[in-house]
Length: 438
Image (cartoon, rainbow, N blue to C red; front, side, top):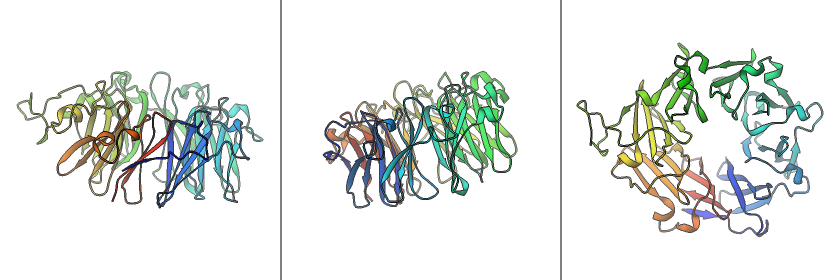
């Protein structure tokens, strides 16, 4: 099914939405935060009964135009169970929206507080993570590429720090991309970003030793081919404490991984992955060993998405220059690759994508992948039987149709039963919600 929040009377009809929504789930309800075309932060809330309400958080009495965001918001549920919404203004101040003790929403500029100030302004989009001890970290880069930390601790409040400067990391670890954050194992916190050469930087925090930093690319043989572009995907993998998956300038999939025995290593997956040959894939050009031939390019144009299957296999998906969805899979130590759009006869060539995919594993072993073309939501899905299939959800489902087209990359948030809920903004600035029935 699909629905859109079309009753915008509380907001007025001059408030079309823009950009990428941020979504958090609490029980059966969803809170969606997205900017409108005035850069105000709009909250759209869907109850567990399917009822919608809307609120302009920036126009509330406790906020104002100084709390308008220059980037899409980031939302999380803090250690106290309350939702926090973060972003930056056009001058780089960090803004947080949150519920007050009385239940209403209020905005706060964390940068203008005492002992903070202009030295802690940020660039780009921040990353937010809830850590041990009910701590909340906001991590971002400033214009000099320093890693800026805003840390909230119960009974202490917010404190800002320039980690690159205070830890004497200096220009050696200057960031040229927005940081991505991975928590754990244990109390550890890991921050990854690229420098101006595309080398992978790793800042990490442990409770006992504090912050440290390293350049992971410099360690590798043929380091130039291990340089990345875009935004990598992060995850924990069995037997590997961390995994970082990104693409280099040639579109080849690069896999950085850390294991207890080898520390950090890297591999060019595209150069080593064997083509898949499955019962429903094309066998044209199969070699003497029975390996399927690559029917088209498996190099990536967009940023990858990665997830672990229930059986422990690692799956990475991205789009290539032709708009096909490329699927890399690793089971054990062996990688395989296929072009799902071109190499699977059951998938129509018209199901090419125009944005980066998002994915999650559903109840059981099923895999759900969503992406958009120029206006429709496309759904690729896998189950043991009949393997991979795909459809245009917008145009092929009788109860959906063109009025539920999408104009932004989809945001996927599974519900408590692992059923998918997908949110996007359409070309007219309305929030669109696709959801699977039980």
